[in-house]
Length: 116
Image 1 (tube, rainbow, N blue to C red):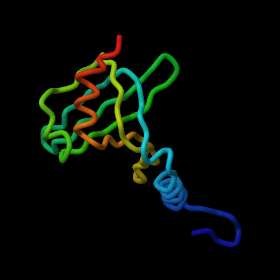
Image 2 (image 1 turned 30 degrees about the vertical axis):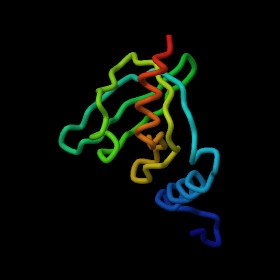
Image 3 (image 1 turned 90 degrees about the vertical axis):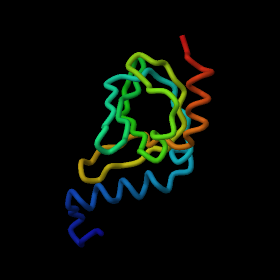
Image 4 (image 1 turned 45 degrees about the horizontal axis):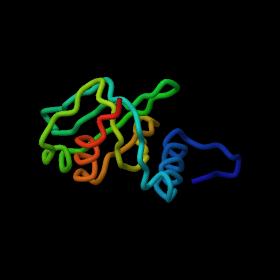
């Protein structure tokens, strides 16, 4: 990955960051509390895209079709939630996001923890 001059390509840096994120045990199993904003339901793919925010920051989030299609509700902007997932990297854009996992845990948390 690294050459003699310590020069990296954009792709190499993005891949290195992805490897670091994927191997971190804390970021691989994390709960995040925040408010849903910028919610988008990609009907063509079945994926759900949105941001989670609080008073001091924001992180992108995604729920892939395999989980999203089993939800019995549709999240919406302004929902205050506690979500389970892992922090992952989208290397093509050099961005990180929370990939939501454990759909049953997410659904039960949303239903029982509409935080005020």
